[in-house]
Length: 259
Image 1 (spheres, rainbow, N blue to C red):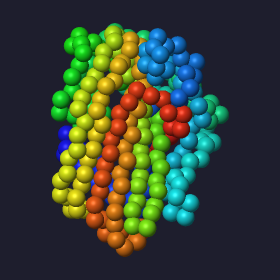
Image 2 (image 1 turned 60 degrees about the vertical axis):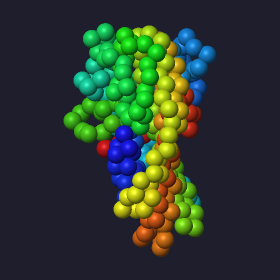
Image 3 (image 1 turned 180 degrees about the vertical axis):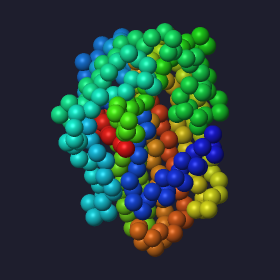
Image 4 (image 1 turned 90 degrees about the horizontal axis):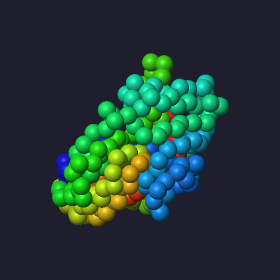
């Protein structure tokens, strides 16, 4: 667990100079036409209706302290369902994503356990309320046509101080479960030495009440790096890495197209 955290952190630290970060999995804080059987709009969604403007992520602008996004203005796109195997073809038309899926085929469901979602890899003591539940993880959409392009739901931001740089990456993944299940885990802190000095990782307690249907798992990682020298040529002295997971649909996340 801790090795995974440090490896990912070091990769992102290297990206400080250009801050051209990539996205990993997928939504909207509005119900977006979804029907759900839970008081939490991010849980128990029977039909997942996804839509929104597709964006292209740019680099971090040191002068404005922002990560630039621009609307996709290219040709219309079709999603390749050969990897997801959900029998659904999504599209991007005039820059707008459209995708709708109900219950996945039974043959595509896998056993829901602590290895099911890589988000849980930080935890050494994951506990499941049931052991017979099966699920499906939808993390991105591959674009048809032979390219390596994909679309996922994410957001990147940064803030540059005098001798600190904080960068945040948020992702959302859609998880279908065929029965209610609660996932719990104990948060913690790990401090270790790296080539960049002290590396501190903190992860929050888990108490995720997945409901039958689709659920949106939101992951947020914030890296705060202290350094000497300049932002373009830093000497890193320490890193803190904070990880949180919840069932929620932040409105701020964007549909991002990546090559």
